[in-house]
Length: 493
Image 1 (spheres, rainbow, N blue to C red):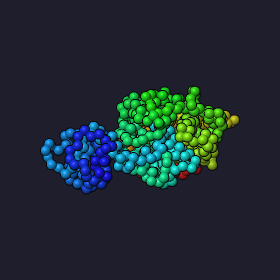
Image 2 (cartoon, rainbow, N blue to C red; image 1 turned 90 degrees about the horizontal axis):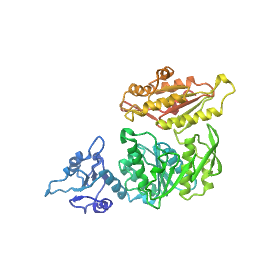
Image 3 (cartoon, helix red, strand yellow; image 1 turned 45 degrees about the vertical axis):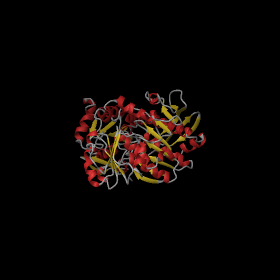
Image 4 (tube, one colour; image 1 turned 135 degrees about the vertical axis):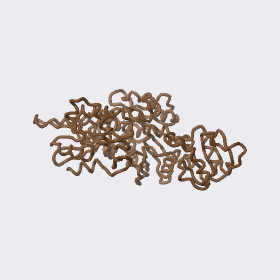
């Protein structure tokens, strides 16, 4: 593609050099630069891409997009490299990537899902629903990416702009007409979605998360809101009226706004008629349907899916029929039954609100299944840890919530990353009183913690293994090891 054609996607402040040259590749990673490529110098949190400009020039890069004037050539200097000065290289990369791949998002019906919890469930089940209705679709999610039936490993909730547009292009080439993607706050802040043409945006909820990155809750909220601020008037927005930030998201939104709620008047409403560990009987807008998902948080998720599907023009009865067949997403309230009579639930809950939602759901179901034998009432055993190199403020909160809702709490490791596991556990135990600590087990080794929970469980009990869900690894001192909560539970069944 000619550089002049590529540059029509952005508004450069200044261009130094020839723009009538062929560009062979687009990169932000200097290690991938080759002869005739375009390098975009991003300013990261740890590394400034501008410092790699000289190395890229030595490799034969054809053009460089930069935001720091200090790296422009001295006036009058002749250079075979073209320099393009912009305000924001992150945003420029998103716009350039979209143009480079032929603006694939404009050839798809693209729906983004944002919020703290529920993104994976909503995006994944929408992808499955649309395919069940006979349409080709793609998925970009925390767990895995899909192009129709082709599974592609996911490394981030939202990929970088080049990978993202490349995947969307592959969806177009595969004949997909729909694409559903999780949109993380990091992706919005870092402009990874710049240049994408969203036909719909969905909001789940907002609770404390990623404060280590955004610094304040207001910054976190306002970053999420940018997805809705950028919608075109032909698009739709579906927002959670039960969340106090639900209507904040759609302020100033040009798109058609629709609401869902389990408590208030809204476009899409639902209530639980019956509930067990294998599913719920719901009333959705006055129509009864059994779904193989559990929990009030999943009622909200299903309402969001239902609303989005109607906004996309699908028949209501067809949507309800497919909803009744959809299974839980990997690592999201997954139930494993033991022949000894206890049940284990593996869930990705890794924020205070998510932990509270899962525990309250389990308690409600346990309350509906009380034993007539007073000496053997079912109890909840919770195994939970917190990730390293992440928001430390939520650690004591998560321990408090887990302790309050469980008969037995076992604190353990999650992904310590570069932190000392004992230091993370200390942050968690700081949230408990001396009395609570005396009845809490602290087992650093996660496998041993799960084994202990399985050993303690009696018939009718529930074990909640929270925090990792679909993840099949642990990162300890920066080294990735295989570890799967499902596998560990099944060892003791």
